[in-house]
Picture (cartoon, helix red, strand yellow):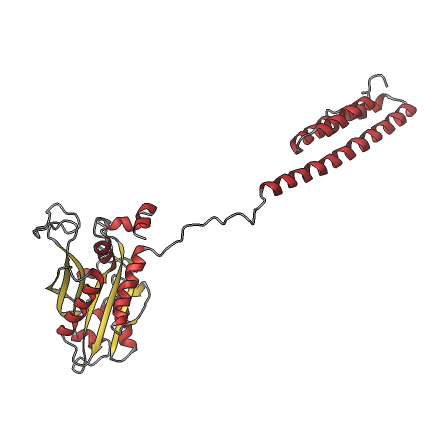
Length: 350
């Protein structure tokens, strides 16, 4: 017994260390020190092989008493420390229900969403319905029914993003396919606006983006004329840009309208008091005008392709660039700012 540790003294030391453990980490260190492989009780167990029967019995009783006392103390202290940790956590996480609420700033729709909704509201007030369609569109609706034949430059990959070239599925390059779907599915009179996102194989610069937003409109009925188109667009321009905005219509050419016209508004970023534009302006390239929409009378070939008698009905169509209107309305000089994610930009325009 002379070489065996003094388990009584070791037990007292263990109980003191366990009682003094301030947290669960310190308690684990005490457990390893007094019950681990290098602990006094382990050393005592290894010494039993050199003892006679009476010595082994006496030492075994001492080892069992040591283990029971130390393990009971460890378990009790662990429960105490766990309870103390829980109380501290509950105290730290206490919620004062009487304290004033923390008000978070309200969110808002993206500027382009708001402008698109405003554009749609203008035409809904004129009696137009709202139509929608898929962004991944069949070439038949995106091109064929819009009088854009095979081999047309607009169908090349340098202008169009193809989802599947074999099946002629594209990311729609305009919302005109929604007009085609509406004419195929219904009978005149038709008056719809088609808001949505469109895609082009283009690069970002101050006035261009590979994805942008349009609101296209279509009116088909008996005796629709260019005068109806002009009056509609003037009403739209007054509603969105104010009575002081200068607007011009100029002849153009689109595959699905004939005759066609583009509508420009004066550039508010560079035009001086004497009406002269700044040639350095990135927005209008020094011309003093910004194109905001294309329009025209629906080509009779388009009406016929969609199952509408062009001898009985006529119509007009137009397409508004939402980003261009937003730039004019809110003084945005670079279209890329809409997608920057800069909260300073969105908060100012909220």
